[in-house]
Length: 422
Image (cartoon, rainbow, N blue to C red):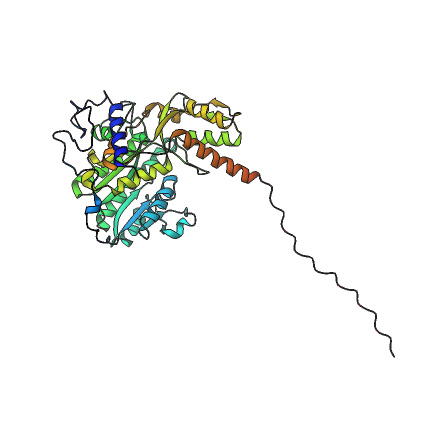
């Protein structure tokens, strides 16, 4: 948990980094202090909506009443982000988590900590309605994480659209017609930014204020379609919709899907296994990334934040970690695996995405409204993943222990000759 002083300092630093992109004296949309020498979260810009202070003395408040029974439904729980979010929710909200799964089960012991509902397919409205109806008495929140990654979307955009936009529409409609749940949380992406977006300090606010910008890909347009649906339900039906702009997610898992930033995971595994790597993106393209543990912390902060504290339009927030180019990654991998080598073999889809997306996400909004700052830096992230792959490789190559032989039975004594007759 970061101290108020640390968050204040990070906010001050992030706002300084954004100059002159945001002139606090002329840019009305940012609810930060006008005094450039005294950035504080208490000194809000004139005309900005009044919000409660970010920090208060909670020791002076009476203990809260016990929470009412509630259920959190997670769609897309079997994915890389979904598994980690479910694990955190299971510890944070024990007994409250329901996972809507198609076929892929969760591993133990996680599966025993949550309720798993199989046969839930965002492309099949009947299955969505059935699971929402089953938990209608306590359902309050839905996490929608179901969406193909960028390169997978480029390969089959029609299927991806049915899952991403169609799935969001079916979920929102089922929530409205089958339950009283109104809170929807969605995993947006840096793929929502197109060529017109800022290269540095790209924010969710910018996306909300520039709905007409072209993301330049089916992947980004589908994410925009989901935001439009959430805005419609928030305006027309009073839904509490929130979304997170997620950068490339790096983690220690052994497998992952087909995305653009996943090149980094491929490269780290090749270095750990002593294999050459063919880079599918330009080596000088900087892309925003985040460690999965930090991402989950940011998602929980977005879910927990009181609605009145969310000052961004449409309650969207970028969850920034760090940025690097492939060349920087390769230089660091060479220190971990001196024999590591790479070539460049551009994948048309991945290279196009890398050229479109921003170099760096802005942090100030998430610091101010969510109190979120990523803790795990670039080199530590790479080191963790590298060591995880090395450990798996060593375990796979370790000679198997010979099976213990069963103790032999004592040799039977030969039968004695019959005693002579008397």
